[in-house]
Every structure is written in structure tokens, then in C-alpha cells.
Image (cartoon, rainbow, N blue to C red; front, side, top):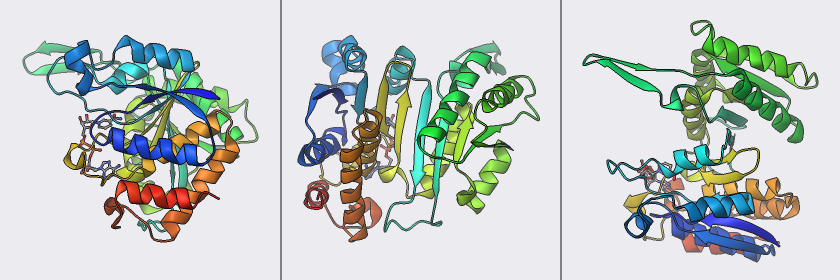
Length: 331
Ligand code: NAI
């Protein structure tokens, strides 16, 4: 029996969490879910959107599935997501982007993975107001963090039978910082002669991604470019309702969809659980439950192939009807 922390979130979080728990249980896998609430709903009672009990639970269980939580605006609290990544040192953000059956997008055969460095770059939050009309943000790139993420990308490529790891920088302009990231990639790449190497500038990457995303396999990027490019690639496969993600560290991993808490459709039984379900499927692979992962993935793909969809994908099914259809297809 696996012990896994579930942050069931707020907004549509509880609805899509229920759906995913039911599908996993119907697939015959026993998981002891340690359900932890977080986000704006707990602030009043506990004084913070991310109470220590949530972090303790993830540290104990090592793996968490996280539904979206609303980030309170202007209340002096840091985003739960940023805080989780920092406190658990979840240094790698992984976003696999693959076309889903019967979800029509501009391109077929998209199958790429964005590996984003999650801890430094301009997101280190070191900013300074020089005077009323000048502000500085400092871009931090270290060899240690850069080699760590590049090694992660190559290891991911080996484990998932990928052929190429392409490094994305703007090293022609930011010669020292992005230059260091590129140099770290080149050092690590020597350890993986079986994986093809490629280097590209971020602006050229963006142009090529919208022209023909099938040219790419695994991409490894510093934090800021990774953030922007991974939203672009989510758009290539059908948008927020189907985009999955994971944040992985040395000791813990948190799997979560890319989308937010969708307050506009909260409580209406309309939300698409696919992105959370795909994140959960990746989580099952991470804990070596490959057979169950495959079984659930097959059921999801069959459901979509048969034309059963929620409203965001042009269908008519509610969250619960879509969930029941997936459960029917679990063979
Ligand atoms: P959002 O992703 O929640 O919603 C954007 C649009 O996409 C909305 O129209 C929504 O209805 C739709 N949508 C999103 N997920 C969907 C799903 N599964 N099924 C069907 N439709 C879906 O982005 P928004 O509105 O900018 O953010 C709302 C809140 O979520 C904010 O407080 C934000 O800070 C938070 N957020 C949390 C994240 C997380 O916990 N990982 C990530 C992004 C935002």
C-alpha cells in the first residue's frame, strides 16, 4: 500500500481530486491518501495558505498529488506553489506535452517534454529599486543547479527512451549567466553519448515550436524560459484542461496540473479532470506502478477516442459523467 499526500486544493480542486481518486481506486490500486487542505480556504483558521502539516506530510510520504489552489492576491502570502518548490527543493519542473486522441489541435504527433530548472534564474526574487525610475532584477545561475537539471534531463531521456536533449538559452547575449548554463549542459552531455545533443537559442526555439513542434524531443531550460515555453507547449496539445506537470526534488515529488483553481466554474461539475489524471498517471510511473498507470491511461485515451469529452474540449459531459466513462473503460 502506498502512502501519498493529496492536496485537494480549492476552486475546482476538490471536484477533480474526487474524480481521480475514484478512477485510481476503480483500477484496483490501493492508495492510502493523506488528504491535506491548503490555499485560501485554510488561511482564516490556520493563518497561512501552506500550514506546516502539509509540508510534514509530503516529507513523510515523499510523494504528493496536488490539485490547484487559489493564490490570494495582495494579502502578503507567497504562492503555495512557489513556497512548496522552495521548501522541498523541488528543483525540476517536468511538463510532458503529447497529443491526446481526438483532441484536435493545430499539429499532430506532438510528443515533447519540457524540463525546467525551478530554483534560480530571475525567479530567485533578488530585486532592487535603484531610484524611482530604475529597478534591477538579478539573474542567478550556478554551475551546481545547472548541472543538476541537465543531468536530470539526460537521466529522464534514458529512462523514458527519448533520443535527444536540447538545451535552450540566450547565451549569445547573456554570455556569462546563460553561457554557464550552456557550459554545464555540455559537461553533463559527455556522460550520455547515447543521447543526441542539440543547442538552440530561445527565440529560435519559439519560432520553430509554432512552425513544427514535432522537431523537438526533450528540452532543458533555465527557469524563466522554461516557464514561458512550457505554457506555449501546453497550448500545442489543447490547453489547460489537458496539461500535466510535476515538480521533482532529490527527496520528494509533487505532481500537479498546469491549470489553476478555475473559480469561474467552481462547484458546477464542469471541470475537466484530465490534467490532474495525467499528472497522477506520471506519479504512478514514478512510484513504479507502471501497469496501473498504463491501464488508466488506456481507459482515458479510449474515452476521448470514443468522443466523450467535457465542455472545455467541446464536449457535453459533466465531470462525474466523464469520470464514470473512464471507469467503464478500465479493462
Ligand atoms: P485557471 O487555470 O484557473 O483558469 C483559466 C481558464 O481555464 C478558466 O476559464 C477556467 O475555467 C479554465 N480551466 C482551467 N482548468 C480547467 C479544467 N480543468 N477544466 C475546464 N476548464 C478549466 O487560471 P486563473 O483563472 O488565472 O487562476 C485562478 C486561480 O488559480 C488564481 O488564484 C491562480 O493564482 C491560481 N493558480 C493556481 C495554480 C496551481 O495551484 N498550480 C496554477 C495557476 C493558477
